[in-house]
Length: 194
Image (cartoon, rainbow, N blue to C red):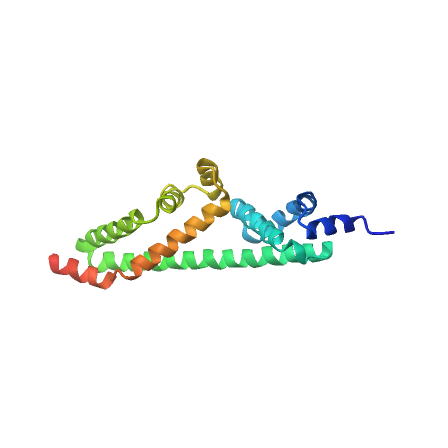
């Protein structure tokens, strides 16, 4: 007798949405729980779980068994969690480093500190205003207003993946623009003006 899951796998390999739905329903809750346990962030766990299923769907023709699917889901999700945790760790380190630098500046040059901050913030805001329209809007909603991907996606009637892509695009554009902005030169100019 043939394995009853064989029909699901055959349909899944051929791109059947019903077969994909069956695989999704079978694995979603446990995979989400696994991801949430690793990163302890509900919204990000939802994002990672959804992205994992998108990756699975893109490669649907490559899976011959339920075990292959399950292994792919958990390995892909685990890797995405590790990437997220490394990103979060870098963010924390960068914030701590920036905080340390700002504290040092306040101790060494309290009189010009506000001018430096204002000049840096002005440059950042100018660069944000040069972002492409949709990219700028999403960036402002995420970082300036503190909205989550899901909330932005609902408000703008876009997918969460589009929101993530636009945020990543904004960061990339800003990094390139601000890399050309010489902070040391700015400090020297401000020091000369005082």
